[in-house]
Length: 102
Image 1 (cartoon, one colour):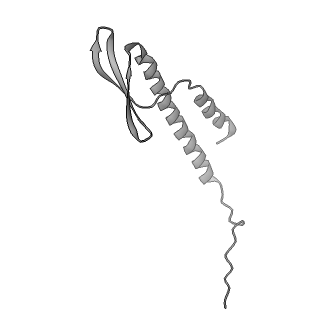
Image 2 (image 1 turned 90 degrees about the vertical axis):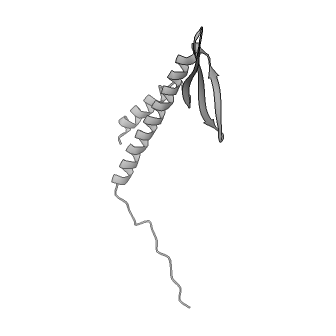
Image 3 (image 1 turned 60 degrees about the vertical axis):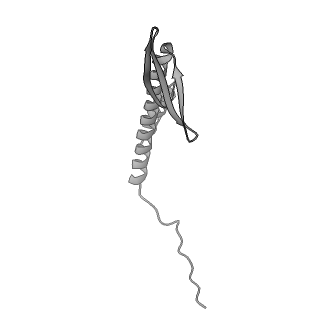
């Protein structure tokens, strides 16, 4: 991967301004609209947060931001791994163990 491609990945990552992990589900409909529950796994526990109808869209955008972050970092890692595997490996730095006979 050249530095231009690497820079593009990093720029896209830094352009993500909001992130949230978890799953947003509708729990009921109220006079003000739908009420939501955000479930996520934190420190080994399932955590639920209730999201007001007026915060649902911002929460959805934050969830999208986290998914985009995950996608970009996975693609970046794959590109670096592919590059690493394509490079020739030099074994000249390795030394064999010395075997002593008694």
